[in-house]
Amino acid sequence: MLMIGLFVFIVGTIFGSFFNVVIYRLPRKESITTQRSHCPHCQAPIKALDLIPLVSFVLLKGRCRNCHSKISLRYPLVELLSGISYLLMYLQFKLTIPFFIGIALASILIIITMIDLDTMEINDRFQVAIFVLAIIYIFTQDVNIMDHLIGFFIISVPFYIIALVSNGLGGGDIKLIAMAGLLLGYRATFVAFLIAAVVGGVYAIYLLKQGKSQKQAIAFGPYLCLGIFFAYLYGNQLLDWYLSLFI
Image 1 (cartoon, one colour):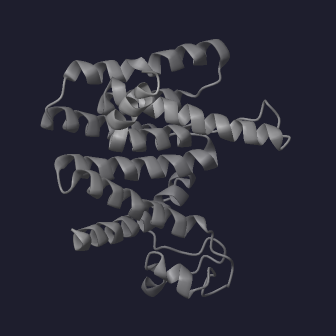
Image 2: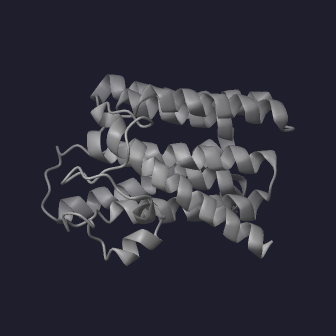
């Protein structure tokens, strides 16, 4: 089990390296398959030896081998986050269908988070991908389909109403929680929203204390992604714990 867990973690970091390419190039409408990895500062191609997840960043001391410009800390962080996410999925589900759906979901959520932080947009192709994962999950697991259909609407409909009234939420956030709700079911979807609201609210309070304007736009997608990730892993357990506080 330890060896498999280590292998899963390493595979996660390798995929995380590719996610960095997607995160950087997709908003710029650059090809993610035909171009070699290159330094964003000097455009020099990156050698294969310098593409080893986590290790290369340490060996290069966080600088480009060619121009010595600083390499963004985001790159190793995404690799590490991907490895940890894959490992958590393995520890929870072992090598089952929910595990493979889970690592695919984690991958999508990591990419959405980083792109949303940069652009304040969530590409519809990621919503479609989560929808596909939801269909696979529903038809391969012993679940109540109605619970998942309710999950589709339980948060997305209030979000849509809020968006109509105040224009405070983007369409990408609404689609994200709808597709995730179809995957999670209504109980875990509520947990995902609760996590997103608490963490996002704490960060908003922090910004206000730092003197930021109340009108400053904040990407809510990353908080939804965080909530969806933990809700997929531990949704029912977290909800049972939360409800036990009031009993």
